[in-house]
Image (cartoon, rainbow, N blue to C red; front, side, top):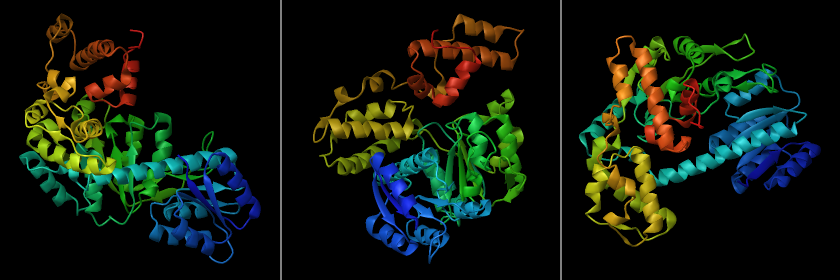
Length: 465
């Protein structure tokens, strides 16, 4: 993604150096030598990213950061300085800076940080575009009893500071629910920080959550605030909480109990005030039985449990959701909307929708693109909607093989051993059925790809099988 980058620094050499780096990467570069001129440029030129020196003549960088945050809160600002202390860096991060880089500037550090910030801009734009397709709480559009009950509970819980545990299958809208809880609370004007615990490598998750000091480990060339610190006074959304290690769970439990922690490599205690919303698509009670999730953390998070119903349990809402998506996506792509014939809806309502509302959205998007202005009939539906429409994944309708049957009837095997034996057999068969395609298998059985990899590895199941 090509970006427009604004550099605000009174040193000509710094501006010249950064300009060359970013232009070589294909970005457009704007330069200003003072905070006052830089703020004017932000208003007029709408940059995607700002590099801002802390020590500037006249208005300093921290004051300029306050002005940018007040009017352009989603604009990432990377602070730079050759004379700043750790306290200054922490202050900048707490004021909303995206990151902090010390001078002399490292080319690698500058590019990595800038690319990460530009990716953040891209994701925010996509989410903004998605919100035009999915207006606020649109995944909760409907009049089915289960969705009305969920919306009622959501509206009751949102204004409080209560911690919430969201459960539900992939695609049911757990992050959307977390955002709705944040927007309905007194913390609305403060940060909403989301963390996908399954997407962060185990060796990096503590650094991401708690931050680190310079030199705490190889590659830690600057102090960095963690997600808990960034969420101070706001809301921290811990998605896929069931994928964290027991070690990380123990540290998070302490933070939740005491609202304080130490960065990696530091003995200084940082106090925070955060509302925690956690989410999972797993059965945490089973994980507790397996010894992979802490019971005390479960009850600490589960102050208010909210379950998002799968789409198959609210099939009366499918037509309403589909019509909304058709209107919005047709506008987005500037195409004539497709016309869904009445014969289509019984099939759509029978289909199990393993990807839930997200799958429905993707289906409608495909139809808008391929059938603009045309009628959509039964034969136009994807094959899986005909062949799998009566399968309900929640009912686990599969044949029990002789091998599984022997596990069940064996008197020499306990529950945990039986569970491992079943999962090994199940994953081996599924991996073979999907010809080693991990991505498709993960989607089909409702697991995160990274979690599935770890499961396969732990059971000694390899692609060659």
